[in-house]
Length: 466
Figure 1 (cartoon, one colour):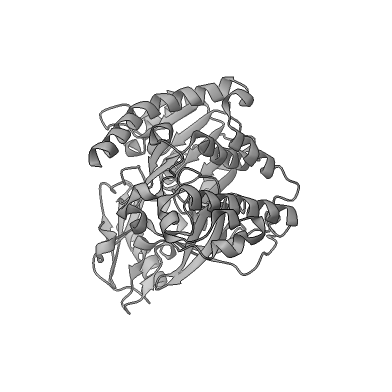
Figure 2: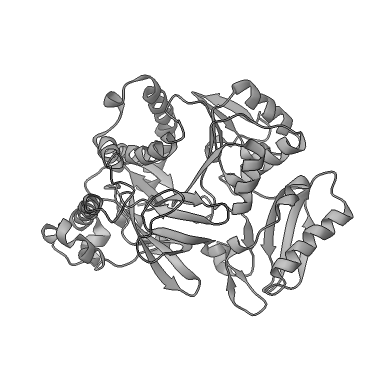
């Protein structure tokens, strides 16, 4: 079994990078009819529905039920785990009973899948014909994910629709900062790949920032696609130099976003910002919405079906992906926490009437332990906006229950007075739950293997050390 698994991954790791480059280039120069799949055009047709922004509309609800029933039938017919665990005749499942049937499926989580990953891959497909990825970006414990190219393209249709509202298309020039851009530290920080300037997250430091900004100026991107934590470092450097970038919009993904970050980016770049929530397992897609004070996420009803599961941490997001026939994940517990609002309320900011995460609390492993012994969501700790004038990066660390450390990489002009101001602000905000609160100056904040900065690191529970 191990040798077979290694063979699949070896072949995939060799084939996928050149195939992806070829596919990206072909997508730019060939008409969509020659490159894109049936699933891509199916998704596009749904996204063009006049009523797409209203989940209560019968046309949208009908398509949602059809997508759910299709996913459930595939699972019951060809996925070993569901064939064994769910005793339902696939022929009995249809749009009329899709919601009731879905509730009869068990909730699953990462541990369930990791016990026997092959049991979650449909027998209808040979793995050598599928795209292989993992979900291990932020937690370090990822699961193997398999999908067809058509399903990958269906996901692209949703992102293109979201970004297209800001003028983006496949020929746009994009500054990209993310996992796919990582370069060894002894190599240059920037490289051009097709119409993208790739900037390595690991090079975002004082040694390279001016070189990076010069490369960006020469490239003249129309859009920025970045992790929020990476853009923080770039934006802080630009503001320090009294500079900016002239772009049409900024796309933020793969990390949770805070109102203070959005306000900071608006100040520096003075452009539109699109941010979204998307689980690596492709079960949910939430469109970010900011009203000037609060951040919410509207969950696209035709991408995935969203539920909540209540536990000791709060309201966990549970998703059923509607576009992956090769590895359908049904009622998957994402380990992301955020409460879905009651009913379908019309959003006064964006006009969507979808299920909405009214407050995203973040990943399970980011929960802190207070001095009272209770759980405290990691996304509820933050810094004041003034900190970016004096700090290039930061991170909250808990090494003992009830205590909290704010680790910072200071700029050269960080004075004792400013240090006290930063620390006093945290004590005022958090001393009800944490004591002591200390400030720790660092020369480097470690990044994850995908180039992200963890906002919170908890070293007090075994589950967070995995």
